[in-house]
Amino acid sequence: MSDPLAVIARLPGVEDAVDEARQAVDRLYRHRVLRRASPAVSAESSLRGARASAGLEGVDVALDALRRDEAHDPLVQGALRASAELGRLGSTWRRAPRQVLARLHSVAAAGLVEESALGRPTSSPERMNGLFDLLETPTKAPALVLAAIVHAELAVVRPFGSADGVVARAAERLTLVEYGLDPKSLAVVEVGHLELPYTDGLEAYRTGTREGVARWVQQCASAVTLGVREATAICEALQRG
Image (cartoon, rainbow, N blue to C red):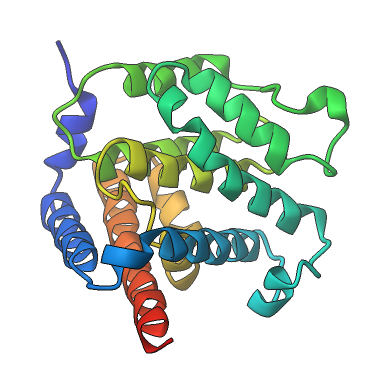
């Protein structure tokens, strides 16, 4: 059986970048604060991730405003709902990815489009079927490679026509959680994407070349490493009290 993700994992530069990200996550999981406060770190990571995801769509909101529930922009609210929904969707992601993406879009795009359009893809059914096949087929590739491809396909294809970026980044985080790289959802990978040349990375992926795809996966690995840095800062803030 062919394993296209394993082929991507062997592209030049990908293995080293993925290994560096995995080592960063491993170090994070040894932080002493997580022995007692991993749910608090995960909750703060989710909040910061939603803020960064909205920022990647051009909507900047202060973190304190999110904490006080004072951010009323529908895209920000959608990003918050998508982040909150991930904990309820994990067990379904492997066996029913279509259902999960429909649900993520329903919560992310509420207030942005008509209710009848929520959760309904409007384009590229063949390409989406290919993505679902990747999710449902066993692979020897690391979880990060799968997560990077899930993210890019959704962000580039834009199957829903609204809030696709928010859905893409939520699906990436969900993949990192459910496929074992970051099971407690601690790394604020969205912050990593915000700090990196996000659009350029997706444009490289869009070319479909080996070099372009490799660049995107490496960029996702760097986003995870930066997301670990953000999560470590959360841990240290909790440690200081």
